[in-house]
Image (cartoon, rainbow, N blue to C red; front, side):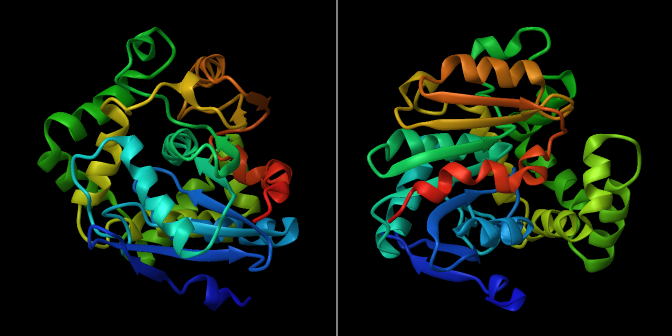
Length: 296
């Protein structure tokens, strides 16, 4: 598969007449895995994992969530309702069983699918997954920063203002993507070191962030707001295995939040390792090992 092939979106029409789009990365004949990128990011983010997925024998199906990239908006849905889109996609692609891979906010969306489609999900791998911000335990000291809580509050209470501000900061041009890619590589953090060592993967992730705004600010705003409303399920109700990866130096989703999430999941294998928010990408080949065993 050429690099150009991985940038060609595929799409289908869902039962409610919305469009759902996705990208294929990795090994087309490999074990199927649905990838859910970070908040407000389109499926282009899967390009960051193309090499690792190819080496690992993984067919990575990187999805545009509602309102992001080329997928149509589905406003005011619960997080758990997202699983119906993945179910239709899996039926469309004739996937009886598949794995899930989610990064940051995408980890929350992956857990929603794992809960709703437990009979079809072989394994879920989450990297620095976002917690359910509406639950009281997330307000304990050290779980969620004040800045994150303020940011989320804007998306919930003043969505138009949030959308306008978000759109101004989104990297929607090649020049802006280049600038943010260079900025990500500055400093002494482990995430900055990763960006310096993996510029193409970093650029792909930032490009996906800009592509998430393709249809305007409503999609990114709703994508983030869904994390802050009740999810529609409890973490202990996720019945399929979860592999949890978390960087001990993560300044985006705190280490405390990671431990709290792990303590509430039933069938979880924790991997708390040296790394920042992008530890899933830094250790992608290792993290994908359980996904290779999903089959079809």
